[in-house]
Amino acid sequence: MERILVIGANGQIGSELVDALAEQHGAENVIAADIGPRSLAGARCYETIDVLDSKRLTTIVAAQGITQVYHLAALLSVTGEQDPLRAWTLNMNGLLNILEIARERKAAGKPLRVFWPSSIAVFGPHTPAVDTPQLTVMDPSTIYGISKLAGERLCEYYFSKYGVDVRSIRYPGIISYKSPPGGGTTDYAISIFHAACSGASYSCFLGPDSTLPMIYMPDALRATMELMAAPAEQIRVRSSYNVAGLSFSPRELAAAIQKQRPSFRIDYRPDHRQAIADSWPQSLDDAAARADWGWNPQVGLADLVEDMLLHVSKVTRLHSQAA
Ligand code: SER
Image (tube, rainbow, N blue to C red; front, side):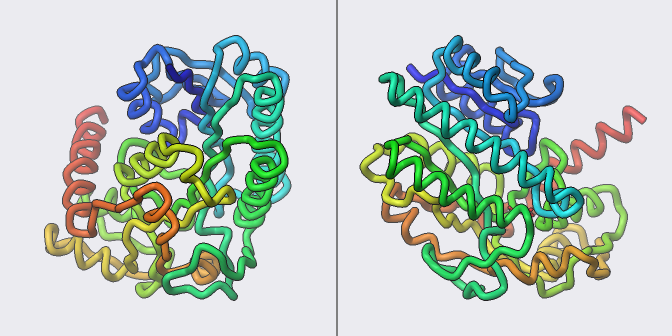
């Protein structure tokens, strides 16, 4: 029986992962945790935790008999640029705290499996942008990307030096409707649906041809849980796996939305986020994830657009009824 702690449970991924894990492992075995009060997370148990407070983390992991940690708390690319020191401190020290606890637990014969998300932000302007390989040039230009690249090295270090069973995915931009996006460059691909469903036109902060790797939340959740469920000997990459969902540009996404909402209009006003997008890959080669633990994305652009429009419309209707 697994006992699971999800840190960052109120965030975009956490709020959906908690429900998915509760379904698989039983709600009583999933402890949701975040720095503030509980928001969306559906778990039966909730703890307020600052991931920088290693004493409290250690106490909770021991008291709850935790066997798996999903450590999702981080500042993303755009928010990180507003306060680089805070982003570095949260992103690095939070991860180090978890890895240290996992090292101590392993030494005490109580191993802890750790999931930590990396990102396409680990790549940079000199990385090959199309079908970006698993192993390649990495010269990130945001503090978020720099912290994720350093985090990847830490994960591999804790695995090879201490045998910590840490697993990671370089998430593409994640598209979802249940919770608001959290300060990322790929978030235009969520905001555009909210504009389309409220009948507004959308002013895109990236140019029309900024192709980026993306993934729909159900695929992202499945990737995360499949990676965590795979036998340890199959996990041959202990830094972080490239995982591809789909790739599209704002122009292509707008066209797919217009097929279903012909009156939808978009214009383009690239801002400071354009430089971040320009430094990231357009598509990823995820052959290692496919070979090692059987990754296979399922959701294509047309299905993603149909599902997002359906669900975001419902949310928009509820909000307008409540107003
Ligand atoms: N979605 C993230 C961002 O845009 C990338 O990992 O910051």
